[in-house]
Image (tube, rainbow, N blue to C red; front, side, top):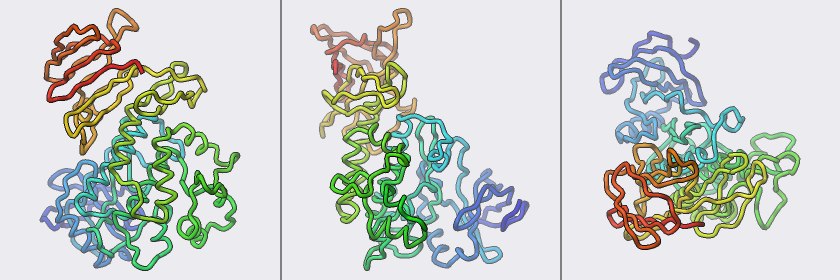
Length: 445
């Protein structure tokens, strides 16, 4: 092991636990990360380079530990580890192997799906919203600090030692590619906080869905020496969205930027419009940036509207809601035939969720709430599922996975009781009383 700390080195955490170094897991810009043995099991230890082990950073770490922030989407600092050889560190949980780094995704080294990417975007938005709601600004949202499961879209936010109470001016400002333009320009009075986090978040969402940076078009191709001055021009002094509707001087090059041209066309207008706002008016007016709630609602609606192409099986975004415009499959160009739609209406404050009843479509607990604070697409939150009849291929029904008995009313007015584990045949016009004031209806389109 080649690092600052040798295997077998023993340290002491501020909570009194003894920490033994096992091996080094990796290194970054601020320090190294080690696997360590503690009385509570194996954990990760971030250990700062001496040049980064400043009193300001030490104060930030201790403050974050004192918050005792318990959220399974974050590898939060759990315990401060005392100074040793001119440095210090903190303990956090180990990152499970199923969570992969975003650079691997951008290099196309991971297999994933449209649905998983949209889920990752939604979960990322909600994770940072949870942080902001507690008065904490992350300040360094970037591709290096978010890991995701390519199969499920679950996310894990790491390197949380740059987060500070909103308004605190200590520490770093972020990664240049993701920094808000006013911070790149070092405008008087501009400081990293939740408003600048919103810009960084929009950049990350764009990169997740488009596999490209929103400000890197023809202008970037014309830069011969990509030094700090060039970066400041591109991301701060003269930022221009690659799909700016009023100025195409930084549009994607049709030969060099084929990926973003294709992914942008595959995205629906609901998301395109939010990205336009983020990277036109939002570049210059921090108060106009798209907030987490709007991202969350749009991403959920689009996620519920993803359908598979009947010809090639690829997943496609479709516009949420009633009578969406026709679309061709991004993979094979075949016209998409939309399955029926389940419209779930919640009790006041009334909201409607439109779920395309694709094969194995699911209804989750968050669909029954007007304003869910956290979405969960796991089996644990499953309420209903579209299933195929075991002996009659092509015949489908909605299976009740809840603990309640539903009342189903057919279009002819006849009713049936659908108990837990039972299935109601899928028919247009079927109305379901899901209990607690939640109703659902099956519509043909």
